[in-house]
Amino acid sequence: MADLATQNPAPPTPESPAGRVVEMLRVPAITLHVFCETPEITAAMQIAVADRRMSRTHATVLPGGVAAALDLYHRTTTPELVLFESHAGATELFMQLDALANVCGANTKVMVIGHANDIELYRGLLARGLSEYIVAPVDPMSIIASISRLYQQAGVAKLGRSLAFVGARGGVGSSTVAHNVAASMARIYSSDVILADLDLPFGSAGLGFNLDRHEGIAQALQDASRLDDGLFERLLSRCGDHLSVLAAPASLDTCNDLAEGAFERVLDIARSNVPFVALDIPHVWTPWAKKTLLTADEIVITAVPDLIGLRNAKNLIAVLQQARPNDAPPKLVLNRAGVPKRSEIKPGQFAKALNVEPIACIAFEPSTFSAAANNGRMIVDVAPRSAATRHFAHIAEKISGRANGRDKQAGRFAFKRLWGR
Figure 1: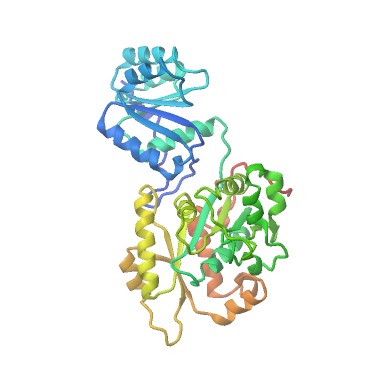
Figure 2 (figure 1 turned 90 degrees about the vertical axis):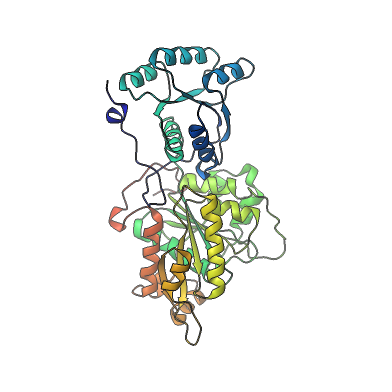
């Protein structure tokens, strides 16, 4: 009997704590019903549906296998996707699918987690219209990857990579890191990047890039219900060939009490148009800030090497790792290291306490950073050969999913374009 795993090998696992990265779509806003037979598959499904990649999916995990599905769908309509576990052999499984087909809507997709590893069974199931057959045992990330591929094949638009930058406390230079990494990424990879300044009252992107208009992100939030590609483009400020900024108003005229999903629509449009969206998140702990961090593809925490930075970074990393068990830990950047006459924690000790190695340790260079900030320019512009410039390029490499500038064509996919080339 042919082995399904040999004939139809599983795809690489998505990003994991081990550090491997492959492209994966987030699962779109669908309704999913899952019918399990074993505790193992039930547990795997519960972890999968809680993952950030399925945050837009309305999922229900139920016991009872295909029998429970048939009973339910005799009384109600079927969702966009039905996934059920089955121990049945070929003949019985074909009968289960035929029975399910009689109650399923025309647009419902069906996936099966089976316990028979047989290529002939797999081919027979696909011939009957089954969307996917997965051989148990199966881990949560493999389940997500299978659903993701199913909708990728169905033509769902690819979303760009969201990169969240946050400080372990205020004033540590997280915005400076975000701005310079976004600019470096646009130059190194010649890929379109949007920098979104989410600090509405105190955002610094407008000053950092010497922009004339600062109302972009506030206007986008205000018009979220009618926001489309055309309006979104008008709110962006171009900063070179490949970088655009969605600036914050930096005004105290309005108090912004934002809902948890306030930025969801804006960021969805941004990610549907460009490969990279850098998010400059202020040092606040609100529902919207927490959600934005938890749903980002990569998180960069910037800290200064002192006790407060250590405590806050440790708390942030612990919360994020607990909420994102299927993702690599946040990336750590130590900033303003080596300030004269300041008591510091050595980088090695800092890293050991957190069990996270910093991807960059940026030295205290007041003249370089002041020259850039006071003139609305990036470090790469005022000091292209500086150590800081090299650090920003290295951070860009680490979070982009691309090895280096020579790989800038790798992994390209079709995006909608906000501007011509």
